[in-house]
Structures are given as structure tokens and as C-alpha cells.
Image (cartoon, rainbow, N blue to C red):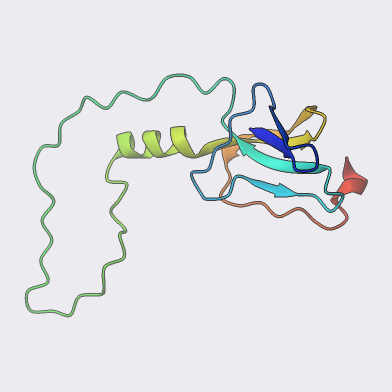
Amino acid sequence: MWVLDVATATARQIPGVRLNSVFGTAYRWLPDNQTLIARTVPANRGQVPDVTAAPTGPIVQENVGRTAAARTYQDLLKNPTDEKIFDYYATTQLLKVSLDGKTQPLGQPGVIQGLRPHPMASIFW
């Protein structure tokens, strides 16, 4: 994560903070415009799950003689290995990050699709 100061045209990296944008924008500014909440890659994420298993054959679905719904992509996670890979990349740690580079973990790592700070969130920190 990098912070840019437009007034001085300088940028600096926040050490150790790697954004996780699997679900889109990985941060939201708090109302004070000095702090943000970021979805980050957990520090102890580990190695990518093993994906050596080859499929046993194609998945064939037919709609012969009946009406079929439009494509919904419900079969994207076809097996436990797909689920492990999804969880690996989608798991995030929420961090409160201030412009001076201080960070504070919020809760435990998990699959967090979105975040929206409450306008009065600063009273809980």
C-alpha cells in the first residue's frame, strides 16, 4: 500500500501492508480522511493449496425435453480443492491504517466481501 501526498508530490509505502482486492476496491476512507479500513492479505496466509488433482472427466449437463434457466455460474466451485483455493485468495485481514503508517488489525481473518465504515465508526476505536 502506498500513500500519496498531493500537496508535496511525494509517495511512501506503508510497510507490510498488501491489499487484497479479490472482491474489488480493497479500502474505504473513514470520515476523518486521515484513516482508512483496508482488506489486506493476512501475514500468516501460508502456501497456495495443492492443485495436483486432475479431473476425472468432463461435467456434462443436458436440458433435453425441459426448460433450462439462464447461465448462473453455480458450478464454479466444483470440488473441495476449488473451495480451498477460493478461501486462500479471498481470505482477508481488516486493518485500520492511519496516514502516519500505524496499523491496527480489526477482528480475525476471514472471507470478507465488502466493508463500509459507519459514519460514527471513530467512536469505537
